[in-house]
Length: 179
Image (cartoon, rainbow, N blue to C red; front, side, top):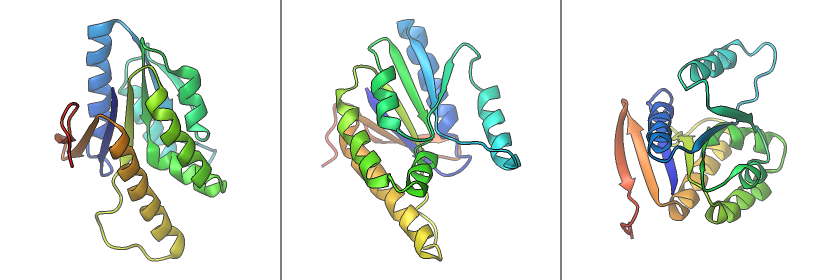
């Protein structure tokens, strides 16, 4: 099962992903691996605090892999039928790839790789396109690319959930066509 979980900042999307991963682990006895895309560098106090918050709220026995770039290859290397991969978060990965000029290629690689992965994947992303149109060409491009990424993933995954105020709203459910 491939599942996209989107929502605004602090909406509860990571908490939902962790809950689903814990349920899956209890049911299957499989391994959960967190694929963290944040790249924390010295002097980034706010980002360091966010990372620490996420680490503190997930089980200590879950393995974490830091993958700020090259997400598709990380998923290919780590996926197995008895391992759930929780990617948190797509939006940070997008920013990293755009900053390095590798965005179109890396997006294509992810979209091509996702269907062939043997194990379950939870993809967490920030829904950034519901506010005002941002000023600045780079900011507008980022919002556009995030929206297009979520649309393309929504076509390829079995389930899509929007989280608002900590409450999940199923937009696409496994076995139900949305067209």
